[in-house]
Image (cartoon, rainbow, N blue to C red):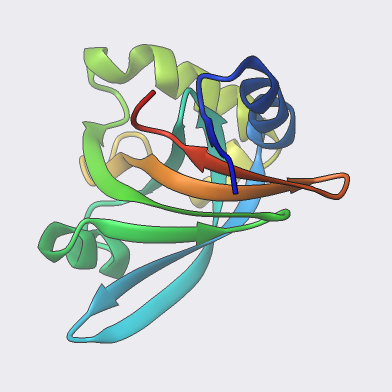
Length: 146
C-alpha cells in the first residue's frame, strides 16, 4: 500500500475540507493500561487538531503522563501526540484562538468556555500517521516526514 504524505496537495485539500471547521471526533488516551475515549469538538489545520479544554481535565492529566493519543471521526483514524499549548489568551495563541472562536462560534459563548479561567487551554494534537477514506479510496498518510 502506498503511503501518502500530508504535504500532498490532494490530501491537504481533503483534510482541510473535511476537518477545517467544527468537528466532533473521538479521542483516546491511556492511563494504567486502561483506554479512555471521549468526543470533543475539534478544528484541523496543517497536520494538527485543536481542542479547547480544561487543564485539570482527565484527558490532560493522562496526556501529561503519556502524550500518545488516537483519534477517530468521519472516516478518518490517526495517531498523534497531545500537548497543551497553553492558555487561550496568551499572545502566542492569538492566531489559533481566533480561528477556534470562529470555528466554534455556534456554541463558544454559551457558557461552555471561560477564557478568564487560567485553566482554559488549547490542546494541540500533532498527527503522526493516519488513514483517510474518501469516495472509496484509502489514503495512508504520514504527517511527519516526506
